[in-house]
Amino acid sequence: MPSIKTDPRVYMIAGGITPFKKRYDDKDFRLMVKEAYDMALAEVPRLTPDRIDGAVGSYFSDHFTRQLKAASMVQDYLGLCPKPSKRIEGGGATGGLCFQSAWEAVASGRMSVCVAFGFETMSRVNTWKGNEFIALASDTNFDFPVGGFYTGYYAMMVRRHMHEFGTTAEQMALVSVKNHANALYNPFAQKPRRLTVQEVRSSLMVADPLTMLDICTMSDGAAVCILADEKSAERFGRDPIAITGVGSGSDTMRMADRPHGKVPLLPHERAADYRHLKYPGVHSFRGGRMAAKLAYEMAGITRPLEELDFIELHDAYTSSEIQTYEDLGLCKYGEGGKFVEDGHPFLSNVDYGLKLANPGTLPVNPSGGLLACGHPVGATGLMQAVFAYWQLQGSIKKHMKKETLQVWNAKRGLIHSHAGTGTYITVTVMEKP
Amino acid sequence: MKRRSRKSSETVLYGLDPLIIRDPYEIVYRHSYAQDSPFFAGLTKGKLLGSHCPKCRVTYATPRSHCYRCGGATKWRAIPKQGTIHTYTTCYYGGEAFLDETPFILVLVAFEGVETLFLSRLIGARPEEVRIGMEVAARFSSTPSFRVTDVWFEPKARP
Ligand SMILES: [Zn+2]
Image (cartoon, each protein chain N blue to C red):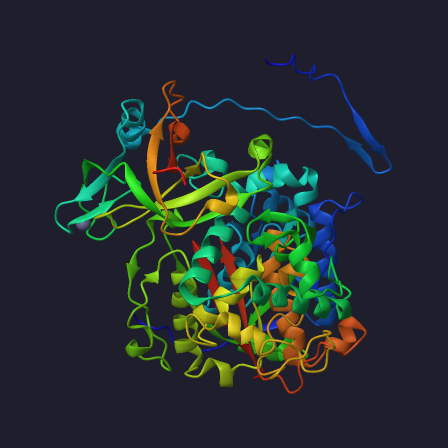
C-alpha cells in the first residue's frame, strides 16, 4: 500500500469543547457546538468567518438525534452557510474520521481553513434504549437479534484475549483506576473518580468479565477543531500544532468473520515474535494495526514507545485500551496487560494509590479518556484532538486550571478513534512544529 | 398483547423550564433477507448453512454469498451441527429489547474445517460451567420465527 506524503503540512490552529455531561436539557446540539466553536474562535481572533472555507460535521446516530441532516442545522446555526459542508458518520470513530476528513480538505488544497465539528445527544433515551441503538451498529440479521449488546461483544473479545495471553480482569481494572483518577484534574470530564482495583471488580457485572466501571458512559457534548494550511496557520494561528501522520483501517462487520492469519508487522517487530499467534481472531483489532502502520509511515515513526510522548486512545472499555496498546505497537501482542501492570501508561505525578514499577513511560489517556470524560460519540474523536492540541501547546494549565495532566515537554502525541468491534479505526499523529 | 398506543395529540410533559415533552417513535419495516434467505429457511429444516468458496477452499460459518478473499460467488454448504466454544460471556444487562431475557450467555462457536465463527446463544448451561473449548450442539426451534435465534447451542453432554 502506498504511503501518502503530505506537503504542505496541515495544522490545527484552534480547538474548543463543552464539558461532557449526562444531559444538557437547556442546550440542543446546535448550541452545544456553537459554544465549542466560539471557544475555538476566541483563540484565533484574526480568523474572521470570511476566512473559513468550509466545515465537516460529525454525529453518530440518527436514532439519538431523531433529526436527519442535523449537521446542516449546525452549519446554519454557526453562520457558515453557504460554504461547503458535509456530515461524516462512522460509528464510534465518527469524530476521528471527521478530523481526518477536515485534514483531507486542507491537505488536498481544496480548503485553506476547515472547521471540524462534532456532537452527540445520547440523553434523549434511557441507557438501555441507548445500548440498543448502539447495538444496531452490529449486523441486524445475524448479530443484533442474538442479544445485541456491545458490552457483550467486547466481553467475548477480551475473554479470548485472556485465554490467548493470560490477561487478567485486575489488569483491566488498572486502566479504569488510571483513567478515572486522571479525570479528577480535568474539568471537562463527566465522571472523575478515585477508585481501587477492588471497587472496579466489585461494581455491577454487566457482561462477564466487564463491570460497570470497565465501561464508558453515555454523554451529551460537543467539540470543534479548526484546521489550516501552513500559510493560514502562520497568519491566523497563535501556537499551531502540525498533523504529521494520518492512518485508518477497517475490519469485517461481524466479528465472527475475522480471519486467523498473520500479524501485519510494525518496523520494530519481527515475524518470529508471533510465530504461533493466529491473527486477528477476535482478540485484536486488525483495523487498528493498519491505521497505526499507515500513520507511523507518514510521520516517520519506527519505535512508537520511544517516539511518542502521550496518547489519547478510544477506551470505550478497559479491555479495548489494553488491546489497543498492542495494535499501536507500544508492546508486543499479548503484553498489553503487563504494560499497564508495570505502570507505563500512568502519569508519573498523579497518586493512584498504587505501587507502580515504571509510571509515566508513555502516558495513555492523561485526560481520563472515554471511560471518565464520557463518550458523546460524534464529539469524542475531536475531544481527543483538542486535549492533544493543548498537551502539545503546553497549555493544559490555561484550559484546565491545573497543570497536573500536562505531559512535560510533549513534542509528539497520538490520537486514536475506534468504531464497532473494530470496523473503522483512525490514528492521527500530532506534533509541535 | 399490543397496547393501544397513545393518540398523537396526547402530550406528556416531562418538564416546563426547559420545556420537555414525551416523543414516541415506532416503525414497521418490510425486511428482505434477500441473498441470505436460504440460511434462514435452512434453520426451519434443522440445517446450518454456511458458505463455501471453491476457489479459495474456505468455508464461512456465517453465510456470505461472495467470498471476501477472491470476490467470487460462494456455494451453500451445510456446516457441522456440533462445534466448540471459541469465546463466551454472560450478559447481565443488555439493550432494551433484550433486558427481560437477562442473564443470557453469548457464544462464538468454532466448527471443524470452517474458517470463521458463528454468534449464538448458549442455553442449558450455568454461567460458571461455560469454558472455551467446550463442545456444543446446535438446537433448532420447532416454531420458527425466521430470525437467527431459530438456532441456539446447548452443551453436547450435560456435565
Ligand atoms: Zn474465494
